[in-house]
Length: 215
Image (tube, rainbow, N blue to C red):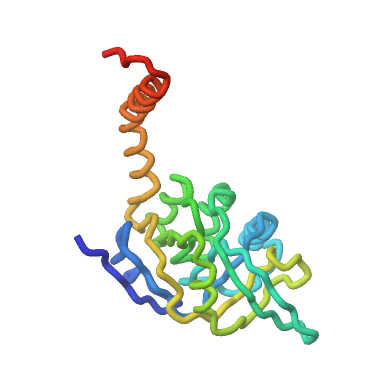
C-alpha cells in the first residue's frame, strides 16, 4: 500500500487533522512554534492556569519539540542555523493538559508521547508528527524566517520561537487523532516477537561457542 501524503497550511482546522492516519506523511506550511525546554512547558502550564499570558496565540497551531543552534543579532533578531527534534517523552506529564489548554492541532518531535497524551489528542483533534532522525539539514531548509521570540529572557533553547516554514517535512503521523499510534504497534510487535528473538540469540551463542542447541 502506497504512503498517503498531505500538504497542510497552518493554522489548521480539526476536519483536516481527522483525515490523517498513523503512518501518513505530512508537509507543513505556515507558522509553527518550537521549544526544547522543560521549564518552558511548566511555564506554559502556568499560562493555562492564569499566572501569565501566553507569548503567542497557538490555537489550531503546531507546537514542536525542537532544539536549535541560533545566531542572535545586535537588534535582538534570531537566525536559526539548524534545528533538530528533541525527545518528546520528556514532556509526557505536560502534553495532556497543553494540548487542550492551548488548542493545539499538531505537536511532535521524536520518540512519541504517552497514552495519556494520545487520549488528549483523540479528544481534542490533534496529531503527533515524528521528525526524521538526522534530518536537521532538510528541516532547516524549510525555514523562511523567525517571526517572533517568546520569553527572550530565557536561555535560547528554552524560548518559544515562532517560525515561518514552507513545506516542513517529510513528517510522519506517529499518533493520529483517532488514538492509533505507531509507537504502540511497534512495541506490541516487538513484545510478541520477544521469545523468538531470545531463542534465536541463544542458538547463535551456542553455535559460536561450539555447543549444540537444546530442542
